[in-house]
Image (tube, rainbow, N blue to C red; front, side):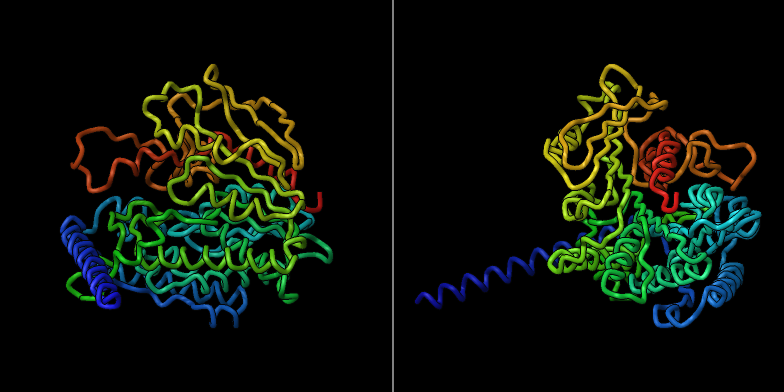
Length: 484
């Protein structure tokens, strides 16, 4: 009798689960009607290098393969674009003002920067997902001026067309990371240090590489790691994004393989986002967590280099709590520091703030001693003037260090994408410099109008894309540069 009841209960549970799954898939298929048609840059998949190939070539070989890839992409787009796609703000139209081939430097490509004088070290720069080596070029130029050889590699699947991300996985990105370090090592004078800088997804790659180097003497261990908005954990939606792509198994529902299908008007970053890329970020962050746990059990975390991280408290792309609980709370006392950028507390946004955001800082950072230094860039409700609230490791005594920078009056928070860009960045800055032009100033766009008119969401323009505290970020990087 009991077995019969249990069987019926399990049967009903299976029926309910199947019904929910069918309903979810039905809703997903229905939502596809609101997604624009796929364009050539969504359907043509370039033949980029994969991990087994990357591990066998050198830097010159990678650049040669990259050049062939770019030529193939330009040839394919020139042949495939329809008349309605040949418009001024399509990065794949060779007469567009945002066409990367028109600029003096195509920042979608891998690059190397060399100092004018003696080399004091090498820096490997790792960009983020859907991004390009453009994102860390300002920091790269600064490091060059400080005497560092800079190696910035284009990750496989990036810098060409968004469809490239459907044929790239995190092992390919790790292989590219290893290649960049191998090249940096060839440029280093004997005894000179290696610095690794990772932005977003590149932060996860920098951490995975450093953790791998704990157990692999063939990998050059960096002396210092700098993380900017690191992808240590992803949002809950990203963890289940793969389910949204199930209808794409049927050719009629190919659009289901994409989370976003948008016009491509940014010359150095994809706007469209395939579900395959979201799955790879989840797998990469899982791999980082597994390596952290393994190194913690073995005690090898004690040999990890110091890590300096810059993270916005408000971040809709990666999990700020994960940066603290999954990474920093595991670290040994090795001189690491976490720098958090708080909300602008001087703005009277109290009634408009989500309750969980208004109190997030207090919940994430209760008063206690830590193995790492903690700095919170914040202000009081009475002033826009920012201060660095610094708490040394193994202490609860907080220092209040006034900064020369104030929160802009129209800024309620920073964002995931803003941190590596100065306010005068020609593409993303709120005050772009006059000497450089990439065909569009995304940081100054403030369109207003009715909802439902634009094909892109207004949040694409409301998200801040440059960092008013960029100079502070650079100063802090200077303080931890190895070989000072």
